[in-house]
Length: 160
Image (cartoon, rainbow, N blue to C red; front, side, top):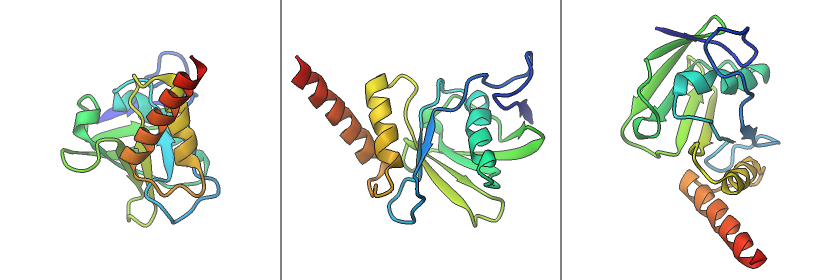
């Protein structure tokens, strides 16, 4: 088991020292497929999760399980301890590569997150964060990324 710390950890502790680049739908909605978007700074899941979970836990959500696509991340342990809480990680080879699902131990609470690749153009990433966090968004992860890239490309072409 690996130990990671939140972004508010003291110097010398593991985990990111920067806040999470995540946006959640506000207001929350049961419509659609994506509840939030997250733009991690690296593909190191144990280093990136503390900042994300700091936001999620700060909102009162009792999340302790994360499933993700193995092709989108570097190898990660099956369990992490973050701020004294055990978090179970499940990597899979099937499913949408641009999503992660956060649940509680009983799978009553579920948050489906669009994961924006760390090396994504900042304008595209910002647009994807905005699109995914819109209260009326009903797009799937791939559609959100395509729309964000298309909008960014159209905007850049219009400026030339």
